[in-house]
Amino acid sequence: MSEDIWITFKAVADTGSVSKAARLLNLSPSAVSQQIQRLEGEYRARLLVRTARGVSLTEAGEVLYRYVNRLLRTLEEARQALRDESGSTRPAVTIGANPTLAEYVLPDILPEVAQRQRLRVTLVVGNSRAIFQHALHGAVDLGLTSFAFSHGQIVSEALCEDRPQVLVGRGHAWAGREEVSLDEFLNQPLILREPGSGTRMALERALERAGYGSHRLSVRFTLGSTPAIKALAAAGLGAAVLSPLVLLPSDRQRLHAVRVAGLDLSRQFYAVHRRDLGDALIPGLVAAVRAAARARKARFLEPSLPGLSASDTIGGS
Image (cartoon, rainbow, N blue to C red):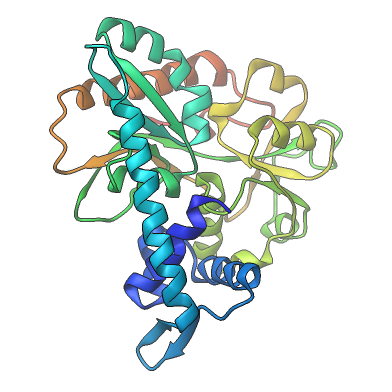
């Protein structure tokens, strides 16, 4: 099982509430409940029981909670040990980033930044919720996420605006259209990233603002790979929702972007780090990431993808 599910279980146990844990982790209550149900199914034991004040651990839950605490502490200690394991005198920095920024923005700047500042750089890739948790627990010096997570120990600094797009293959029935209705979108087979990813959360929040729950989505494929999502969309197997930052010049030949009436997918990318972290390297890294995101827009997104105007891509911070 992934570390995320242990983090979710611990958050529910610590807060005594599914809804409070959901707010802390930036998840929907149903997503939290599903992860708890998955754990209970895996261990064939009831882990939580509802009370008048929320939820509490069962005896089996108490046993698992002790091991989960030990596991999470061990993982953090292992990360710290690996960060410290080096004979080099160069300063070290660990950056955590969601796949969009890690795979499509950071490669443009890391070689130059590392060379100029003589840094040893470790890059941790995970969805936005996981990266926030890494930043909160000090496992990364700087986290790059697609949402601002509210926490007293975390500073969130806006990097730039991003507008995820609905993409279909050139042979899709929507390929000749600029806009579809929300009802059409809800009835379309979708190819999405996993729950907890930035684009998935942006879509779920946009639906909530439009008065719909995420259960209305017709999800056909859930994939953790952006190239795989683009390939399936290009093959006509459904509509994908992705950031325009992941689009390459070659994607113009196989993908078409459509707007969904009444669905605003706008979001911000954020740099997050602990408030008590006084690392002088952070401001320079944040500025470099912001500049790289804007440069990528200029290089790859204008002129825009068919069906997509320049104003629909990515804006400044």
